[in-house]
Image (cartoon, rainbow, N blue to C red; front, side, top):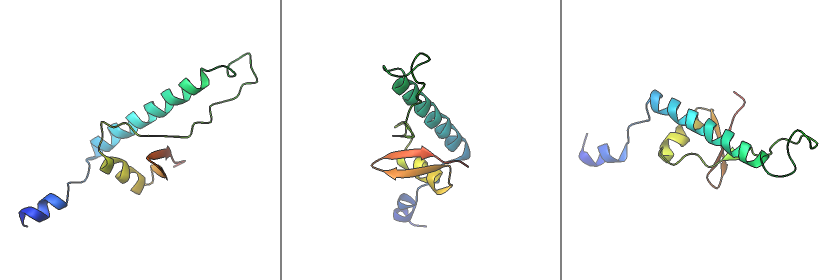
Length: 89
């Protein structure tokens, strides 16, 4: 394999890296939902609305290839404009 081919075909993300990225994504989604629910109009004394946040921009400490691989595996769904959501599966 030539040097040019080695540079254009990056190594796929490891299982461990994908697992850590999913954990970071879930945490970001949870924190974003909690932040949304903490504003006025939510809470135990109101009508009990839940947050409508279903998608977030993934944490930037992982490269885009990691998020694309998770979407390819069906663990995340790409919604466009850099937003991903969890799938039911």
